[in-house]
Image (cartoon, rainbow, N blue to C red):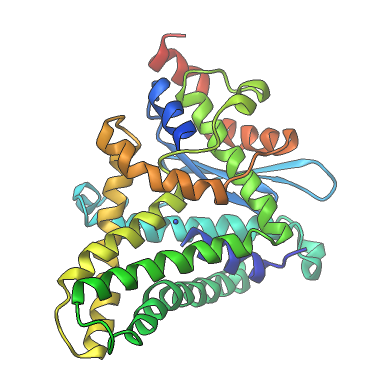
Length: 331
């Protein structure tokens, strides 16, 4: 079974981007619920406001649900109301909570800490989380920002057009990401992670479509959702292609530093687009969401009934879906 470090690195970088889906979104009126989540090792984390819950299927088959409060960096700050600025802080908050939830779920399967299964916290865990986060974030920058740039530079002697070079670099960046998420999907633990990812989306789609949250309705719901984290990462990659057109300096070191410096800007723009996508059903939003749906064909899989049960428990720990349905759909 994957250890804490292995699960953390794989899931963080993964967190760190047809017709069937378009018909689904166009044919059913979605009501924004405000809840979101993330797949963890053998479980699902759901967040509603400051409250979050992690539901995990333990090795003995029982479901353990932990509910807690997560205070974001900008909680109570006026910055949370400023578009494009809040996005990078929201992204950092999501990474922090995601790693915390992932470590909690992995603790049930950590053979080296069998006497402390299910316990989270402590200086050791916090230090491990910090190290894994830094390493994984650095790896993501190298794979999806620097490697495409340096690879594209080999063609610089043959191609004199800056526009063409920028497009090639952007294409390489997206290609590397596609290869990465496809490659890790072959790992047993990641396959199951993708299935729990599907269960998370199905639960949210179920209630946002006005259906009661039960296994039958969740099973029939779509596993694709516009506010997905992989859609966010794909938007980051696509927007980076546009912004990098404006980097005109010739010095290679400065070009690299500017690319890294633009990461907060790109994240801020991507966050606002994902936020709009979660609240609108316009043609423009459908176009923006289409690449994300295609990515979710890889990063989400159909869950089994036991996974659906775990996801439902996680939702119910932090969200009163009955009150929501009554308020939004008059049910």
